Image (cartoon, rainbow over all chains, first blue to last red; front, top):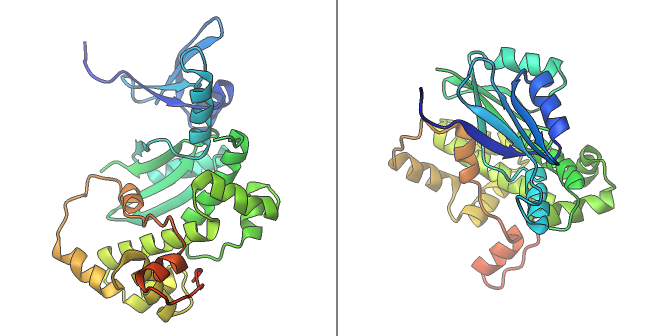
Length: 134
Length: 156
């Protein structure tokens, strides 16, 4: 039994679109996909990382009031959400794989500070940085 | 906050392109094409979305990049000016001072004097945190600093 962070959620504009992007393009696996009425609890995980789930949630009522949901959708689309970092063994190889699947890099791999990093966004606007494990 | 998220997402693409290559020239026409909106619509929508006109956003990115090169490399000020997209060293130096309040050489000397241990923070976030918060036009900032001297030069 391990303790610690189990789910970290991000807001997406469309769960079907996000699910397709994270699984088909980035290679994540579905962890949980459950509907309760119109509410959908959707989490994915990186294949080699069983303990942390990435929640893909839509800002919507009744969890959030309609005005706040609208504001959050706009903020996500403006890229105003906090940093997300993916750590991989080989940034260049990962980027090549992502690009072959149609992921548009916002920053191609750059070597600096003794490491390599790159960036991309998900369809909703969430910004990811890919860094190389040291 | 009334802008359509779908439009905002496309405007973000233009912002991302400037982020990726701030040393390049980015006309509103080119950026509008990236966003898939009309040129007339673009600048207004961008400002409404991100709080600053596109050319001023580009300026903050160039200054940010120049600051990091001054801090992290041994490149000369001239080399840094050209690498970050300025065509003239004079304009670079003047704009840099107007925006940051000190000259490139002063900033370099000061940053060097205060060693930091930030290795564990991804570099891009540090850079973003050091981006100048340019809420007014450089020309306006200049006017405020040098009362009476009008200068409408804004884009390097």
